[in-house]
Image (tube, rainbow, N blue to C red; front, side, top):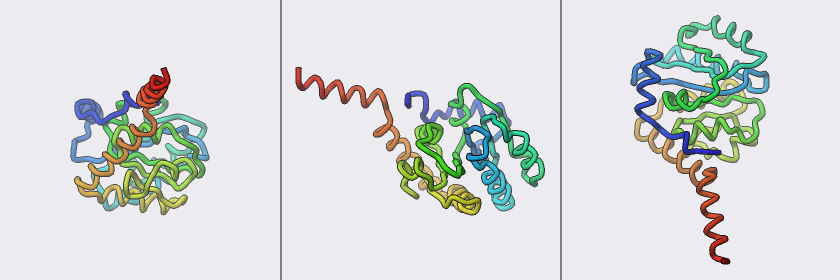
Length: 202
């Protein structure tokens, strides 16, 4: 994973938010995923709509395409929060979309080591992911993200925790997520360390 592309960038955040007419004091929830059954994106849409009744200044951006796009768009249109749910389709590069966002949600039924989750953490987003094999290996609940029950209500509870974070708590979790990715998934760092080890034997 090339983490040099993924980092917090306030300038890009401002430009992208201006593009979508979203102010700095509003919260963007994002997911980047194939719109398929196993990703359980209906959980995210339902959770977002439920929480929108209390937390008003939120947006949900769904980046990706797949066989369930029409069904998921229909579900979104049935919700009170429908005007705040945006389907952006497939994007060749999701970097700038992550940089404008605040919270990343992965509501899958089953998930391996999701590159998209690593990218979101490297960008400093607050991640909420279901307790499946991949996320459970990289998220320490409450430290560098939120690991939640593999249910719709689990997603609701995790997102609610993310919405209620103080600025200090948000910054701490964001920093912990960035540090974890840089320490464990930075290819350039790992290659440099391996070369230094080899140099000891020359």
